[in-house]
Length: 284
Image (cartoon, rainbow, N blue to C red; front, side):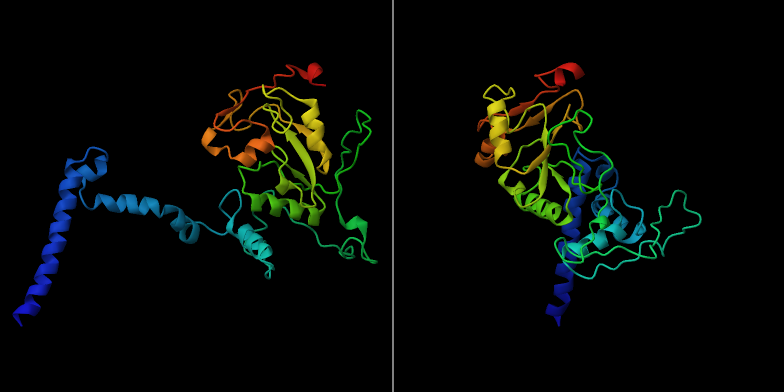
């Protein structure tokens, strides 16, 4: 019997000792004023802060409040990516009459066929081509109208993983849309069937010489092996306008070095503007 009495006392003693040690640490440390003023219980503040995103995502916010994609949209995306049933209602849970600028896609009484391209009953009109013909204004030899009004915006290989780039390019091929490479150049992972828009930034990745200037020979070599339909000139760093960018040496792998045409072991700076032109006339 005495042994059974001692076990709870030992446990209580250990708990008190641990709490005392934590309290002493909280009072003497100088990093967090909350812990110094409220020893022990102040830790709950940091714990609640750490699980805040989960609380907001699953308890506090509704299915339509989060940005840039709310829970309803993500549910549809996840199911589609896993080839699961993606039937999901987007409007029935919302107040359609009192929501300003709520977009409603009207159903067609006579919808177009949605057969695969190449099938006998395929109707090309089910696609929505872009209104603008790229290159038409200046009568370019290879002017064309993009097949889709919805395309994939620029994110470079390096910022995204190889599998992400492959998946996006395969998706562009399936959807018949264009895939923007981002300013990191054309990688092998961009060559999975989807047509490309090659984005040229201030560092001319994939089309630069040893000094970082534009190299027409390297530019043509990169074009030769890729389904590039258009070139997009990126005038400056969108996230850092007027400043330029920096790719640390630690992030430059041999593969990225080859794709972008930059040396290993050295930080790579993207200028804040194009060294080849300084106004609209010289750009053209």
